[in-house]
Amino acid sequence: MKRKIYEILIIIIIIFIIINTYNLYRNNKQRKEVEVALQQFTEENITKENVVEEKVIDSYITDWNLILVNKQNPIPEQYNVQTVTIEEKWKVDVRIKEAIEQMLLDARKQGLDPIICSAYRTPEYQKNLFNNKIKEYKRKGYSQQVAEEKAALWVTIPGTSEHELGLSVDIVDRKYQILDEKQETTQVQKWLMEHCYEYGFILRYPTDKKEITKINYEPWHYRYVGIKDAMIIKEKGYCLEEYIEFLKENNIKNNTEEQIQIK
Ligand SMILES: [Zn+2]
Image (cartoon, rainbow, N blue to C red; front, side):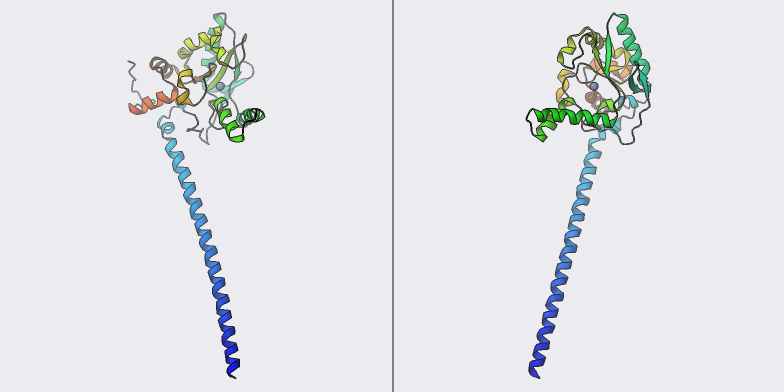
């Protein structure tokens, strides 16, 4: 009899241990799940905060012609482009059609032969360009990471290209169509660099602003900002990033009647 009680007691203890072990296991699992969820939530929020912080400059100016797009300021997801065809096959934002056509017309009146070699690009097209450039560097023996970094210096990362805005055009001299620094020595570029401002365009990636724009010198990439802003940018020797900073520092909302003093 005593032995039987003893056996029952042992069975009860074993059952107790099993139940407790299972509970411990279940609690642990739940805690881990909560931890993972918490971590994901924090990470998401950190990323969101960063994006908001980086977008401060961009959201300051609301004028369509001054939208700043670069590595820190990707194109807003809802961005809508209404394009129109110019020069037979190139698409641009309908709002810059007249300006670009007038600029090309006046250049041609000077006996020059400018041709567009890139204008509006769909996000898919920009993605292809970028991936091809990465492949090119990888073929040269660079690692994925280095190839991406190098590609980003020449082809803008998808989602951060002005070409996706439809506000930029690449123009070359028909006599010299290679996109390299020698482009600046062509008659077409010499004329454009001097006169583009009169039509509301700026040379977007000047050689001395590489540190700020994070894009190599591109003596062929012209961005529309409007005549008034282009003139100030020329006068002050700014790149677009600096100009937006300047507006911000001086508390100038460009879409108001405030006048910007050129000194
Ligand atoms: Zn370009």
